[in-house]
Amino acid sequence: MSSLISLSDFASEVDRPESLIRMLAKSWDIPLGETTVPLQSAIRLVRLFESRHSSSMDEAEHCRKALDRAKERELELHIAIDILKRERTSLEERLRENRVYLGRAEARADRLEGKLHEMSQSLAYLVDQRDRIFARDVMRSQVHEQIQDGRSILVLSHPVA
Image 1 (cartoon, rainbow, N blue to C red):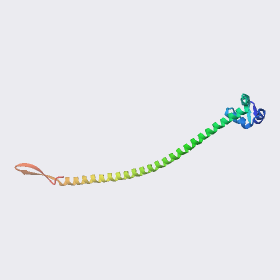
Image 2 (tube, rainbow, N blue to C red; image 1 turned 90 degrees about the vertical axis):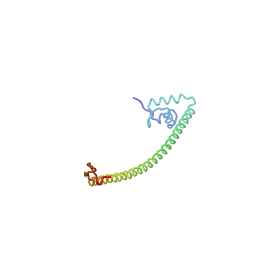
Image 3 (cartoon, rainbow, N blue to C red; image 1 turned 60 degrees about the vertical axis):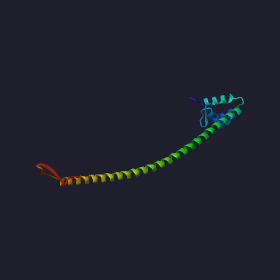
Image 4 (cartoon, rainbow, N blue to C red; image 1 turned 120 degrees about the vertical axis):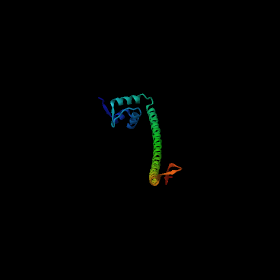
C-alpha cells in the first residue's frame, strides 16, 4: 500500500514550484498523480533535489535540455507529418489518375469486345453462306456415264469450283 502526499504540500516542503516538480518528474520518468505524489516518487524527487550541489542551476539546465529535446522532437514530428500529408496528396492524385485510366481501359475493352462480337457474327455469316453455296453447287453437279472409244467414262456436269 503506497501513501500519497499532496503535490502542493510537497512543493512547499522542498521549496520548488509545482511546475518544476512536474517537469523533473516527467523528464526522469517518476510517476505523479494529478494532485498527489506517491511516497516512492516523493523520495526519488527529494534524492534528485539533494544530489545536486547547485540544485537550482542544475535543475534549470536539466529542464532546459529536456525542453530543447522536446522542441526538437516536436519539430521532427511536424516535419514527418508534413511529409506524410504530401505523400497522401500524391497518392490520392495517383489514385484519381489510375481510376481515370481504369475507366478508359474498361471502355476500350468493352468497345473491342463489341467489335470482336461483330466480327464473329460476320465470320459466322460468311461460313454459313459458303456452306449454302457449296451445298447448292453440290446439288447442281451431276455425274453420268458416257462411252468414248469403247470405254465407259464418268462425266461430271456443273462441277463445284
